[in-house]
Length: 94
Image (cartoon, rainbow, N blue to C red; front, side, top):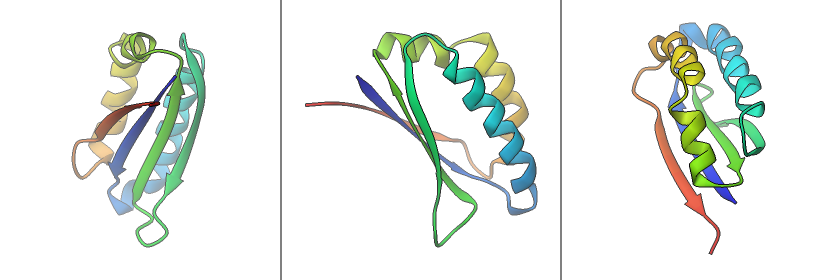
């Protein structure tokens, strides 16, 4: 199993739109092959700083979702709401 950490910084005035778009992405990810779980967190000191933690069974299944046309289309909607590119880190159990 792997954990995907996605860090995003959202433009403050767009946070409500971000909520809707990010929920759509999570709902679609939940249907992707190998998806185990996901959660969305906000920084208690900076509500525009968001963290998504997703678990996938394998890195290849994560890669399938990451490179999918569905995710690309959903990210095109979400990307303009971010003040910088999202940062994605993949972790494995040791």
